Each structure stands twice: as structure tokens, then as C-alpha cells.
Length: 156
Image (cartoon, rainbow, N blue to C red; front, top):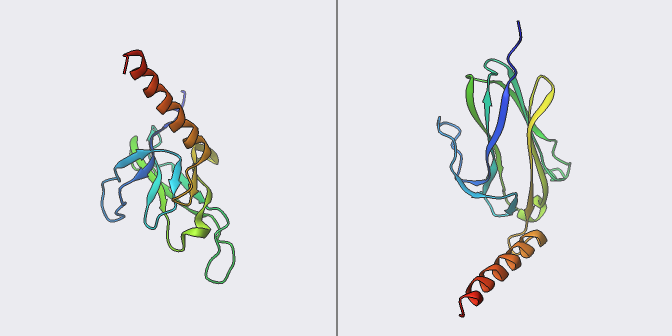
């Protein structure tokens, strides 16, 4: 008899509405992106849909950039374990930025593991609000060129 393999998909990732731990509802996606401005209380992460894994132990982990605690020691990754609640379950993993924002910039990697294997991961690049990442600058330039070309073809 063959065992069913679990199925995992990241269905949303980016910036979300504030997550309420006490609520059964997941936060709502407001912007799909991996570039996150370092603003106090901004919520970012991803929602994964996990199928065929009910009662399996799920490990989650958030690897912060080298953020010091109040004693100047580098904070360890934030991690934990819980059990998958159903055979078609959506799970949110995310974090927020807190003051001071200057030491929160860098790469934030979020992972989900089942049976010791990473099943979903996403890395977010947190930057100061006035620093638009280079790739976003190129994307905006490309989009502006496409819009200008569109109107130029129409004689405007």
C-alpha cells in the first residue's frame, strides 16, 4: 500500500494586513513582493497550503539578519513546531518590523519543514524605506519604457 505524499504550495507571499494571533482568519495579502520597506509594524511573510499532511509535525523558522537583542547579542532564529490541523490546511508564517528600523535591514528567510525536509521557503529583502532595491528600479524603468512605447505607437 502506497503512502500519500503531502503537497505544499506557497499561495501568497509579500506584505500582509496585521495578523491577529487570536483570530482563526489569516492576514490578507496587500502587496505581492519580496522587497519589504523597513517600517515599524509592517507585516510580511507567506501563506502555504499544505495538503495530505494532517497530524504531521510542522517546523517553522524565521532567520533574521544579524539583529541584536537588548544586550547586544545576535538574536537566534525564531522557530517552533505545531501539528498540521487538516488535510487541506493554510498556514501563515510571517514577521513584523519593530523599532529601531536601521538594524532590521537585510535578508529574512522563512522556512517550513515536514519530516526534516524543507517544504517551503521564501527570502525577503528588508530595506530602509527610502532605498528602492536596484531590481525594482530597473523594473520601474522597463515599465515606463513600455508605457511610453505604447503611447508613441498611437501618435501621442
